[in-house]
Amino acid sequence: MASNASVAVRTQSPAYQAYQILHLAFVVAPILAGADKFFHVLVNWDQYLSPAIARMLPVSGHTFMLAAGAIEVVAGLLVAFMPAVGGLVVGAWLCGIIINLLTIPAYFDVALRDLGLALGAFALARLAAEFDVRS
Image 1 (cartoon, rainbow, N blue to C red):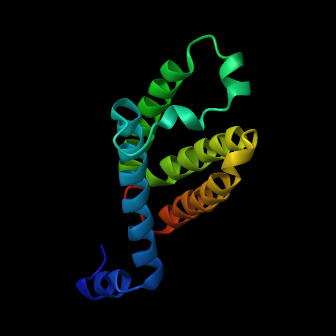
Image 2 (image 1 turned 180 degrees about the horizontal axis):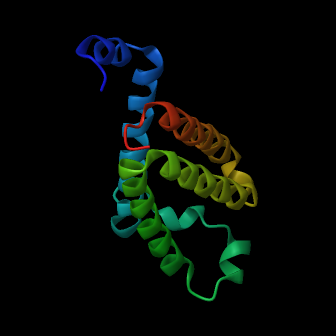
């Protein structure tokens, strides 16, 4: 068991603080974005589904986005309880979103932003290997 002194040093570590920031961000952001797919308070998320991809779906684009929202909420919860796995899941999910966005010329900037988010999610997964006490 770690002493109080070693726990204090660890919590003052910039790497641990970065882990905490990423952990919180990748719990909250997917849950909020996923839930908003049902309410459209932040934005009409349906506009971010590529028409080319929507044509390939066996359901309507809106129905697909509702399913995506549910997956995002689950992914955020996965990060909350298993950040090493959840970080990888969220990072991979964001890579899928990037591929979708690259087929819509008006959203290259959003794809670039999501690349940064994906890298942050992958960094969280790596930091969790060091700092998640459940691992």
